[in-house]
Image 1 (cartoon, rainbow, N blue to C red):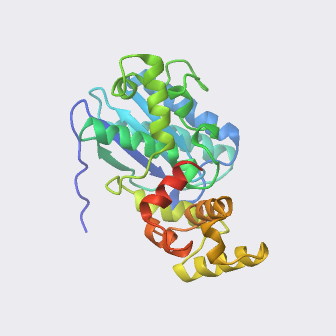
Image 2 (cartoon, rainbow, N blue to C red):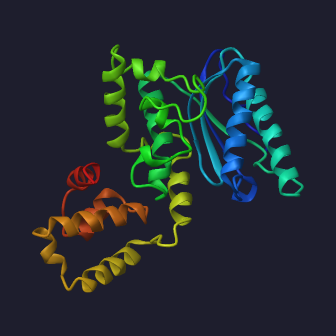
Length: 274
């Protein structure tokens, strides 16, 4: 099947997803992640593109890049080629490090841009790596919280924060709250694939509704309680809902049904306050 031409625009912002070949890890150590950031910074200096968000996971990378008039394919390939050369030489390997073709999507409007940025910053949380997005060291969320954890000016937060408020402090507070309460937009490219892949990397992943039911039964037996008692034990119910959300791809409705028949909106409310 012939490849479909990549959707490109002049002076556009792209959500880039680059995965390791055969979904293998592209980062083995912290030094590797630092090297990737250094490479991205160097290419940013060369091409003068604008980096608005990033997240480095073990086997894939998310970048939110405004091309600033450059060819986005050339920009991403330059980053990948340079980093792959370093990685292959360091680990004495040969062959492709990245999948042949990165995935990209042009941001259509400001609301979608904000949603994608929040999705990127929530990746470690959805993968179960951290309990809060601000705990993850290898994403740009710290820049949006007023802490530059790499190089000053590496990430341009001005446009996205400006969509929340013209006041810098208020915009950071509002964006922070937005990210913590974020629910993925199913229109974001790769969102479902990411969700399944990242959760399956978790050894506690629950493959089906039945597996989740068995897990719930085991958890309740361990504390000598039954499903009916969850109506009054809000702490336990909240704990179980969080575990089901992190370790499965069940819908909010399915999780609500499992924990005693509560509504999807109530499940969402509990998760937002967890």
